[in-house]
Length: 185
Image 1 (cartoon, rainbow, N blue to C red):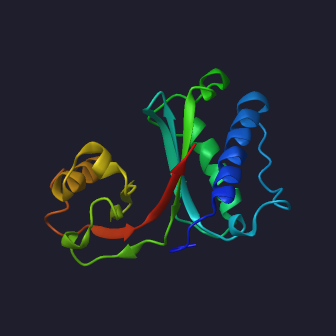
Image 2 (image 1 turned 90 degrees about the vertical axis):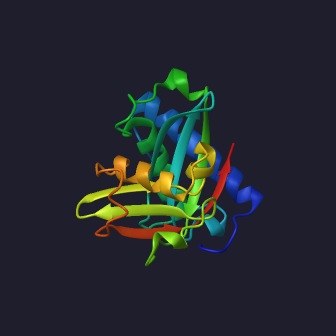
């Protein structure tokens, strides 16, 4: 899916599919994400995705995966439910809150390693930073939304990973970049 844009119809179908799955999960705790027979073919291609929930413009949950071993339609639904009920930064979303939330989807390109932080393009690249088992990700839209330059973004990424803010400067961390097709309700 990297490099290709989803059609407006496919975007609309995917957003509606996630919203419906959230309603179902929050009311009856069941998830049926395997019915893909009537979906546009572009949603059947494997792709990683993050789903972000905003409640009245504020972050309410965000979870995703780079794993692209299932159709985008399946992965996006699972990540939507995970963002609603498994993001450790927030209590589980309630069915009452759902109507106050907007859904944003980021369809991901595969991450690729970079040799130097200087290769990161703010606003174009998302970044995954890792050191051993510690890892953190920022989507491409995070740094511009926060008004961060490259260094500030990397400091916040280190802190998110549980590392000292300056850990990115000394080497020993792995950096990968990716792009994302981002759209929302």
